[in-house]
Amino acid sequence: MGRSNLVARAFEGASAAAFWVAAAFLLFTVASVTTDVTLRYFFNRPITWLNETIETLMLYVTFLGGAWVARERGHVTVDILLARASARNQDRLRVISSLIACSVCAVLVVFGARVTWDFYVRGVHSMTVLELPVAAKLVVIPAGALLMLSQFLRELAGHWRELRGPRPLFTSEPDSGAET
Image (cartoon, rainbow, N blue to C red):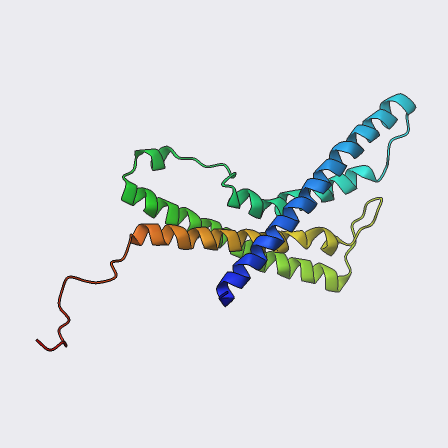
């Protein structure tokens, strides 16, 4: 197994694990909101820390599930141009789209990591009921964006190969340096 294949499999495994964590967080969110509504309206006893927890979990669900959604091609697409373009131009548009997605993810990784590290070093905490460290909330942004970046890079490579088309193993032109 090649090194690049090993790295790709590692990112796929991390993406799948992140998806299942996101799914668990989403299930917890649904159950806890249902519980909170019940407690709030029937017993006048809301769970005070729940809103902050749900906000944080929704951020985690978004970024942890993003790479899996990208792999499944579940992100929203606008295919008005794509539907009207020739096959060659469709390949070009897919390459451009993948480049844009990679660029956005790269920006999220770099700046998300910078901001997260800055908040961690300064020890910034939220001014809410739980007073959670803000870095713990934000760390999912560069982590999830890195997983999405790896997925979009693989898509970009695939679209690039499609754009270049099949390459013949042998050319019909004789080698200029060959003896005749």
